[in-house]
Image 1: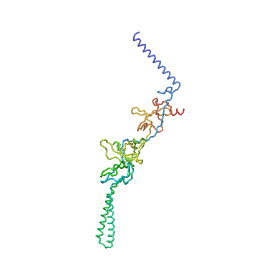
Image 2: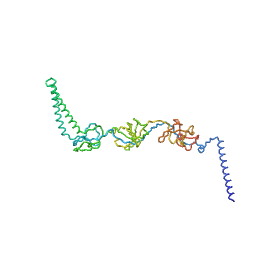
Image 3: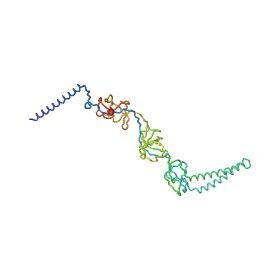
Image 4: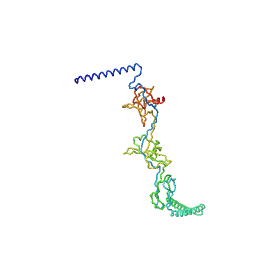
Length: 364
């Protein structure tokens, strides 16, 4: 048998097989039409409805959030130092104490000033008595007015010397300028201090200032009163809420960002100056119709979803908007309460019969 004859027989056999297959397909199709069964291209085997999971489109609130990293600062912070040169006599605080305003923290040696104060007080009392006596005589005309004026001058000078010594004595008392938490003590009794010597630090942490930078593209959305939610690695899962108090008047020309300062109430004093915090700055919120992200089919620039209407799949074009993890906003194409397929779309075609997982569970 020649090679040409073999090829001819193979071709004839293949053609015969194709004729048989086409005839079988036409016969099966005619049987379906005779039985009156609906025929939808791509339907499940045997015409069984496709099992899908549906959810209803619902209204959701979108909150636009700006994320940043911030550093905490005390509401007020001061390093306490001595005003003059002398030795420490008494220390009235411990490390980390909470003190009130004007509370005396350290007393310097003041024996000499105390003695000078006693002398000045005696001179002032004497000058006051002399002035009172001569003033009465001058009013009666018993002494000239000039003598009363001299007595008044001595009285005023004695009072000024007395008040000056009181002020110098008060300089030997180091007081808290405001209520707050003290840091570590830097001196001990007997330490010789000079002007500028650090005694301790004091921080008002009743309110924490949180400074963070925001890119200038968000400058138009920033304003006082915006809600700030901060988180610290030191307190996992805990929210610290505050509000924007001020926005820096200048933009950094290198980073193209502005410094924003927020205030956070710190009643339990958990937060401390210098902590690193992640910041979520909540801008104005909006509402929109949303579906689960898995419900949206993206084909090129077009988006589609499958609805369930009268137990059949209906393909519908939609327009999408904002997104959140797991959710997509639908700006057009859907209405609140529409039943949207979220699982099982891979087998769906427009018009196919479907059955939902919820109805299956109810039948069971």
